[in-house]
Amino acid sequence: MVDDFTKISLLYDFYGDMLTKRQAEVIQLCHEENCSLSEAAEELGISRQGVYDALHNAQKSLEGYEKKLGLMKKYEDTRKAIKKADDGIDEIIEEYGKKKESRELIKKLNDIKAAIDSIDG
Image 1 (cartoon, one colour):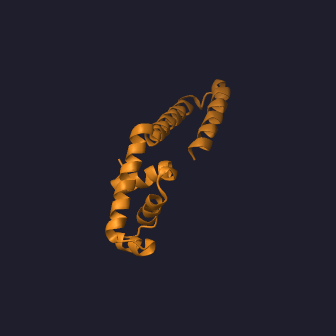
Image 2 (cartoon, rainbow, N blue to C red):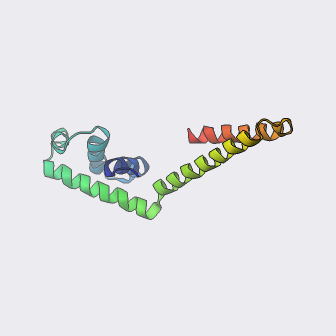
């Protein structure tokens, strides 16, 4: 499982466009650029407490979007399913790959693996 800092950064990737401009700026500075609250406050020309409040509200918003829409969970579930399918194909190739009569099957499985690799990165 990912830590809270990484989780918020991932949620920002999915839902960042839904935040207010100020919330997005604070998340960008504190999570993406790794600025402290004081550094972000100086950059934005607001108080440290203002940055803290905006950051807290942004995090709550991101978590709320995920609770309602579940895009990050769907993404993680999809990645797990792709890995499971890819691993299963590897097992079949390993088991049948040395048999001459399996050449066509292995070719098709390798084509499927290439398709999976193209979406999975």
